[in-house]
Length: 116
Image 1 (cartoon, one colour):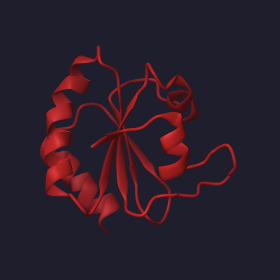
Image 2 (cartoon, rainbow, N blue to C red):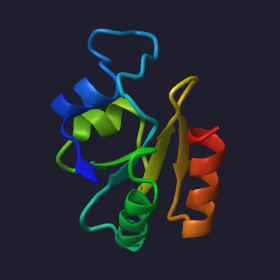
Image 3 (cartoon, rainbow, N blue to C red):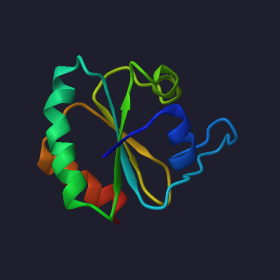
């Protein structure tokens, strides 16, 4: 699991400074967790995402973005509540899911959205 800064986000996910239309820069589907260190529900989701990153290793990338440190990224995606998770398939538009989902629902979303 990798923590993204604005710079690594522009390289690995979406360069919104150069592109108006959505254009995924990644080589495999990804899930981005928008979180903050003070957020209780975010802390509940963190170990689940850690497990999923091992289970889906080589199939998807799981990234984390600290909304306190990367306020511009949070703003670019209109993050108003955390945790918020952005599921980015190789083809098509990304989908945002809000709230601390249990592992079973996260796996379902990964399978349905990212690994179709």
